[in-house]
Length: 58
Image (cartoon, rainbow, N blue to C red; front, side, top):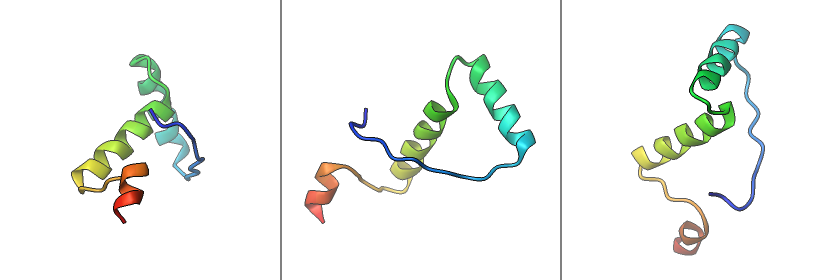
């Protein structure tokens, strides 16, 4: 897990937000957990590395 956190603010349709939060709750996950997983998968799909090792490689 990441050692530091940063805030990501986004705008979303209220109906989608409610549906997303309800689905997350049914799966015993927080919306933040799901969004973090989606971001990790998106980065991996596109071959993007991140973290201390990625910074050292630049």
